[in-house]
Image 1 (cartoon, rainbow, N blue to C red):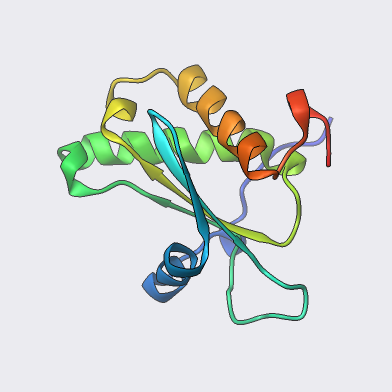
Image 2 (image 1 turned 180 degrees about the vertical axis):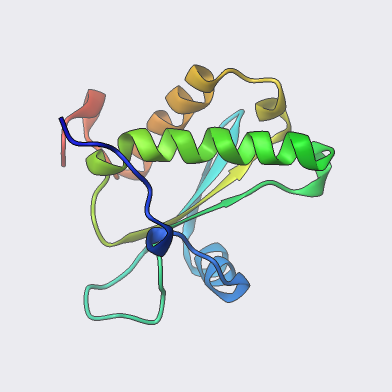
Length: 126
């Protein structure tokens, strides 16, 4: 069985990368998170990374924000192999995610990915 890890080089790090996905991407919202999706063309190399995670100060203290980002990272990590290639994603936690269970955030993430066309129906690969 293949070990599922999330490599550091696959994560968006610079604010300019986040801003580009926010500005040019499409957004999909649910109770627990907002998913921004930006299609990266294969020849385009000026967007380094595939996924970014954010939790604003409205969510509360640093402990709560870190927990929300951890839930988002785990949801992405478990299903990264199912997602369509050539997309940059930003997952933004919402207030309801502060007290949510991991399974709820994960189901919400999968529903938004299906809505965005990143994965097929019920886990089928596109």
